[in-house]
Length: 219
Image 1 (cartoon, one colour):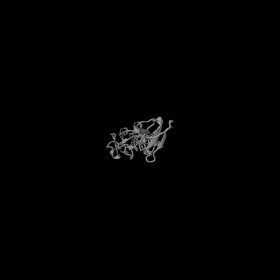
Image 2: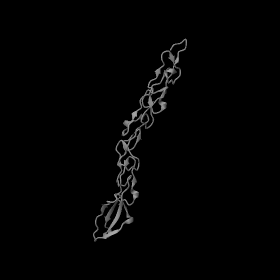
Image 3: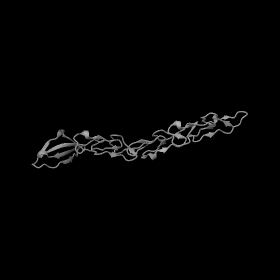
Image 4: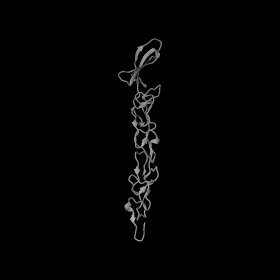
């Protein structure tokens, strides 16, 4: 709350003993209330104005709306909030949020304390409402993934990856000479060229890239 002195008025004269302040909420408008007190044995009326939704004030002697601060990200502030209310784990909010319904954490991210954090490089998260880094899954062999994503990307034909946690396409290695890499969903281990065929260059993407042995030799 903060007082609006622009329209105060003397409404009654009391005796010589001042009385305690009394807060009288407005029935017509929940954003206003009246504060009655008696300096110099007189009763004066002030309007008290709530900080709006999306802001809060922890001050006990506020004199203007300058004390109403923007609600920080990761929390929300209803009308007349004295402190931000944290979002539940697995949800988040932007700064200035006025809704008690914090947004569910999106895929590729986790929300431990009201803030969205992208899953690290080499991991992914296909589900919403996650609240811990352990919800980010390590990319399996044959694939890679960058920052804050919901699914892995397979290594392209002609390349492979035999270990976990690849974070860029460059971590997929060229299929070595004598092999081809064509597995659907990403190659984990290169496949040798069939008997009677060979391959002298790296990067074969299909078995048809393996050449037939020439006359006078065998493979």
